[in-house]
Image 1 (cartoon, helix red, strand yellow):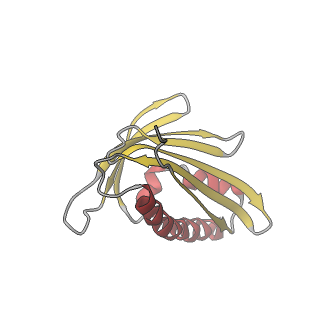
Image 2 (tube, one colour; image 1 turned 90 degrees about the vertical axis):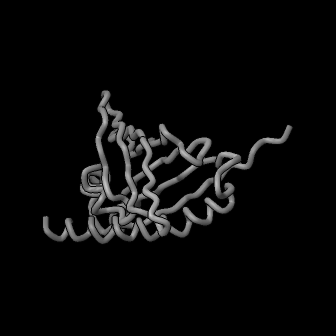
Length: 155
């Protein structure tokens, strides 16, 4: 029996802002509609200790379909990491994301490592989703960079 292929992506951006500010803004889910251009709405469903469960709703796609799912995030300010996963995986068998932050000479490096596996009936396989994520993530990270650097300039 062969093991299923697993998709893994690793993307980083350096933001010219101090780590505490990058951490604060990027973990403020209410700002995600500003930070991500693909999200229309973020609804906090529950908070249990450090874990937040929330619903993300995307803007309609080219066919008018609105995609929505529930995710969880658990930030660890001691290690400057966030473990996230989809609770309602949709076309994914599973989707896990590790956000990590570290101070670098030019500011803060924010990295997203995504591990996932697509369901057999999904419209794309792991390789195609890897390409999609690696195309879109740098675009979204540039939005984060611009918004946070703008906020840092106001401080």
